[in-house]
Length: 80
Figure 1 (cartoon, one colour):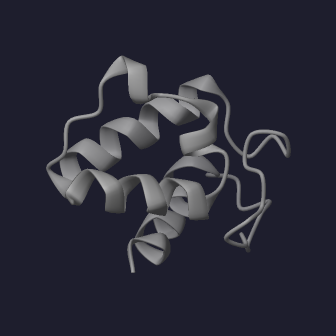
Figure 2 (tube, rainbow, N blue to C red):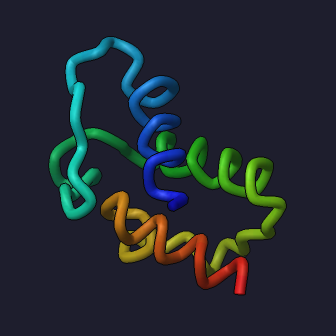
């Protein structure tokens, strides 16, 4: 549910040059170079404003942001 919305954000706002047109739920976004530390911070800001959640520094872990599936699962856990 949240995965498609997050995917759209990454494709339109993080990957602005259009080099990557498709992302699978389990694609490793960090190892593949799709996002870096700045990209993670942009995603954190997007998630906080879109889903009205608060993400602490302790929660900004690679495991939570390594793939669309991981990010979606993290958002679900924050929403309860």
